[in-house]
Amino acid sequence: MKGRLLIVDDEPEIRDMLYRHFRLLGYEVSTAGNGLEALAVLREKRMDAVISDIQMPEMDGVSLLREIRRQYPMIRVIMITGHVTLENALACMRNQADTCVFKPLTDMGELEDAVHTAMAALARWNRKFRELKGLKPGEAGELP
Image 1 (cartoon, helix red, strand yellow):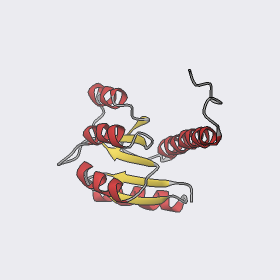
Image 2: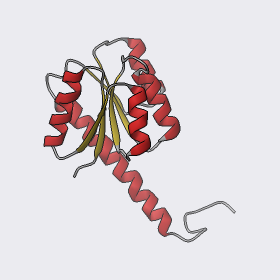
Image 3: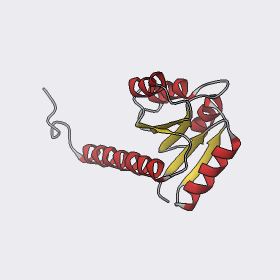
Image 4: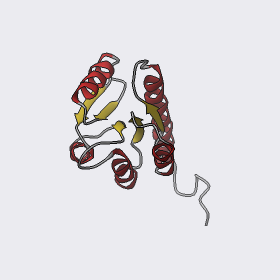
């Protein structure tokens, strides 16, 4: 398994297409139809990355992104949107999304690359944390 992904999109066709695509690539995939459903999934399952649409009912993607950053800072978040605006791009940047991919998703290469990059970043952090766990107090250059 390459990692755990949560796909969040209110359009069932897109959600199902992404689910099938990333399952075929070897990821464990869960889905949600909006931000509130996504938070419920995150409370139940450990995820490595989230791919979320921006415009959704009940809780939009930017609000979800903010909540993920607050509650689950290690989860990588990739935003997708069909409403390409400077405001959406800036909201993603301000709230520390890993990247934003624009719909339509005709070429999955950009999204696959974004997921691969997110998983690699998460793996680097996990290695650092394992290294730190193995050190004795003071060995990591802590200030007195």
